Image 1 (cartoon, rainbow, N blue to C red):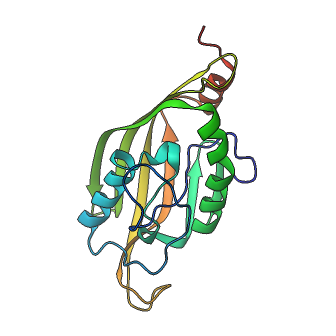
Image 2: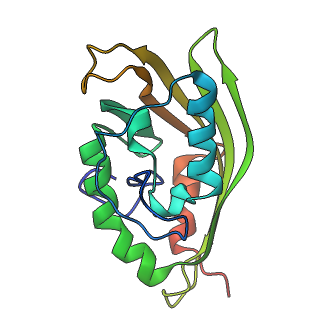
Length: 186
């Protein structure tokens, strides 16, 4: 995504005060307490998929991420939740205009406390019906959310568990996934 917001599956920000209707407020929330345990972190990440459809909306619970978290997917890599929010703000109007029937199906989610990550397996599905050739996006992938415990000396003085590395992989080559953007469905 970076400055080219047309090719990413990585999204924006969700504050605890946002409603669950899917309405997005892409403001970084740094004053809300991060998850207090790996299990609570898993629950927040699950909600990002199931409640907030974050693969399409970009709505994530930002207190669960370190301010300088590294985000990667098969097409890009960048650092920082502020960059994440900016990228989503650039992409959201395009998605809102072109996409319909968008969903993030959470296929599995588990925690590996020994190694310090939560892994999700998901299916991102949606139609870009606003384009004349009406391409369909259908990508299955996995994301590892590498986390660590932060102490009260952390970035905002609040102890908890935060993701420091977001590592997304797709179960198809990146070129094939991106080719879906130009492949007609009629």
